[in-house]
Structure formats: structure tokens, C-alpha cells
Image (cartoon, rainbow, N blue to C red; front, side, top):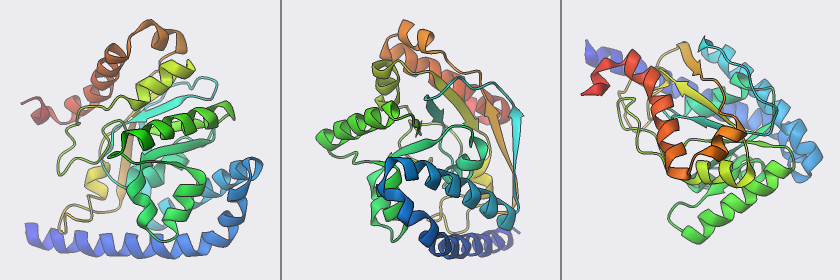
Length: 252
């Protein structure tokens, strides 16, 4: 039975992958010309929101906010755990209120078209090079001053199979403290069941309900009151709590 479900999951992954590739090509003429000026990049963000909603509709993905919360005035740091590539595609329709950029792994630059989008609109981080990683934070600081919020997955990668969080890296918290920014914490609860890592060939994948837990935002004053390590531990425990409640086996 498990193998049969795995085959259906593989078929679903192929469908999602093909659909995403087709949409990337179809949206390219609308997005690419907008990526060469700061004013038009804000318009490109709105096109990505439309892309996200279209993708959700065609893939039968609905987003349920298990808990809702108010947002601070932007810009801010959006902090989320990372379960699936689906996290990225859905973020545009989860938080379309304030334009944001992703601070993410530079490996995405290798992919055709996606690499162009990522280089022009988002901020690649080359994690193996400390100098380049530091430059990415400087780049993020410049974009924040232009009014962009920044999305960071502080684990730096996707867990292999289960939703147990990895240790958080420090970049998000350094940026929040240096720029005196509030933090908007999100816990993504089940995207790994809707679209697992493609390298996990027969791993789970299906249409369904993506569950998001929105925490109360952490004010800039509270961010400033904690040192960087304290803030990192606080945010880890905050994001982890809904996961432990949903998956008690992670406590072991």
C-alpha cells in the first residue's frame, strides 16, 4: 500500500513540476522587464502574487491560517521554518500585504529562468563563503531601506523527512537587530506532507490544505531588548511550539 501511495505521490510531483515550469515560462515576459528598476520591482512582486494564487488553484492547494495575527507596519523580517519548496511558492499569497524579498540559498541561481528571477528580485546567499554571506546581509539592509521586508528560513535548508526543526543560523537575528526591525514569525505545519523534497522520490505529495500558524509579531523594541543569541533561542522555541503540539513524537 505504501508503494502504491508513493507512486501516486511521484505522479503528483511530476504534475506540479511540469506545471511550475510551464508557468515560469508563461509569466517570464510579464515579469522580466520589471526587474531592472526599483519602482518596477514592486510591480513584479504583484505579478508573483498572481502567480502564487494561480499555482494554488491549479494544484488544489488551499491555505488555512490556524491562527491569525496582526502585522506591524513594514518593513519587517518574516521568519518561518522550512518544510518544502512549497513554502516559497505559497508565501506570496500568505503575506501579500507588504512587498518582500527572499534571502535564500545561492544554489537556486543554477536553475534556468528561476535563477534569473531569484538573482534580479531576491537576495542569494552563498553559505560556503563568509565574505559573500556578509555581502548578502549588506544587500538585504539596502533593500530594507527601500521598503522591502525580508523572508528568511533560518534553518538554512529543508529537513530530510520529518518536520523537526534544525538549529537556527544567526543572519536573520543579526539583520533584525542591526536595522531595528520587528519580526513576523510563522510556523508552517504540514507542507512536507503536501510536497516533500523531490529527491525523496516516493515521499509524500498531494493536493490539500496548507496549515500556517501566525504568531504575534515581535516588536522592534523587544528585538532590541534581547541579545542576538537570546533572540535566536526565543524565536526557535516560538516557531517550534505549534510543531510539537501537532507532532508530539518530535519531543522524543
